[in-house]
Image (cartoon, rainbow over all chains, first blue to last red; front, side, top):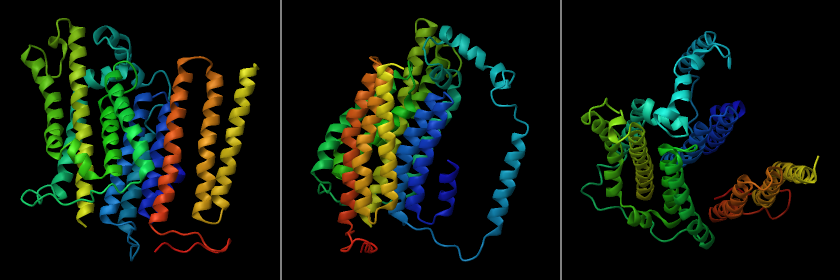
Amino acid sequence: MLVTALFVVRTRDLLAATMLLGAYSLLSAGMFMVLDAVDVAFTEAAVGAGVSTILMLYALVASGRFERTPTRPQWLPLLVVLATGAALVWGTFDLPPVGAPGNPVHQHVAPRYLQQSGAEIGIPNVVTSVLASYRGYDTLGETAVVFTAGLGVWLLIGGLQRRGAAAPVLASAPHANLILRVVSKFLIPVILLFGLYVQFHGELGPGGGFQAGVILASALIVHLQVFGADQTRQIVPESLLRVLAPLGVLLYGGTGVAGLLLGGNYLDYHPLGRTPVGGQHLGILLVELGVALTVSSTMLLLCYLFAARVARR
Amino acid sequence: MTWLQLLATLLLGAGSLLLLLAGIGLLRFPHFYARLHAAAVVDTLAAALFLAGLGCLFGATLGTVKLGLILLFLLFTSPTACHALARAAWVSGLREPAQPGEPPPSPS
C-alpha cells in the first residue's frame, strides 16, 4: 500500500495514478478483510476500487492525461503537508494500544450494541443495525453528502447549459465489438441480481444500501460503456435519475419523520410496526432502500454527465 | 495430511508458479502484445488453479459452490478484459516492432 501511495504521488501520468489508486483501494479492502471488517472491506472494494476509478477515468478523458510539471518548487504546500502529518503522528501517541481490552472502543457502546441489538433490532448483522438504526443520523448525513456531491457536479458541468439546447448527439453506433457485447449481455443481469441480493441481504450478511447502489449503478455503467450512452438513456432516462436521487434522501428523511409523527423520536423506527422489532425491520428496509436509490442514481447521473461532456468535445 | 490437502497444495503451488512466470514475462517481454500474452493467458489458468485448490481445502460445502461461481465469472470476464485491452491498443494504433528487440513504435 505504501509503495502504491508513493507512486501515485510521484507520477505525472494521471492515468497510471488512477489505476494505482484503484489498486490501493483494493489492497486496503484486503486489509479491512484481515481486520474482520467485512462490511467496510466490501464498501471499499465496490466504491473505492470500482466506481470512483471509473469516475476518475471519465474526468481524465474530459480534462487530460498528464499533470503539468510545476515550474518552480512549491515550498508552502510541502510545509503545510509536513505540519499536518506531524500533528497527526503526534496525535497517535495518545491512542491506546491496538487491541487492548481496556480501550474505550471496547467499553463504551460497543458491548451494548453487540449484546442488545439482537433483542432490540432483531437482525443478525450488527453492522447494519448500527449503521441504519443506532447511528441513523450519520448514515442520513452520508446519503445527503452523496446527493449533494452529485448535485454539485451536475451544476458544475453542463447540467444547466443543456436546458434550452437539444440533447447532444452522442456516438450512438455500437462501437464495441461482438465479444464485449455478448459477454456484457450475459454479465449485466447477473450484476443487477447480485446488487439486489446485496441490498436485501444486508440485514443477514455483509451488504447494504451503499454497496448495492454502487453495484447496481456499475451494471448500468457497463451497459453505457459497451452500448453507448444513448442506449442506456433509453433504458434509464436522465429525468428519472433526477427524480430518484433526491427521492432516496427524501425516503430516508421521511422514514424519520414518520417515526416522529407516530410518537417516537426522529429516526426511531419502533413505532413504525406493530411490534418494536417489526418497526425496526421496516425502518431499516426503507432507509437502506433510500440509500441505494440515491447512491445508484447519483453515480449513473455523474456518468451521463461525463459521457455527454466527452461527446461534446 | 490427507489426499485432498496434498492435492490443494499441488494446485495452489502450480498456480503460484504460473503467476510468478507471468510476472517475469510481464516485466521481461519486449513489447505490449507479448506482455499482454504472458499476463492474459496465464492469469485465467492460475485463477482456476487457485480456486480449485481452495475448493479442495473447503471440501463439499457452500463455499466450494461459491468458488465455482467465481471461477465461472472469471472465465467470462478475464479473457474479455484482456481482449478489450488488446483491442484498445490495436484501435489506437499500437503495432508490434518488425524486428524483435527494437523498441516499439510510439502510437500515433
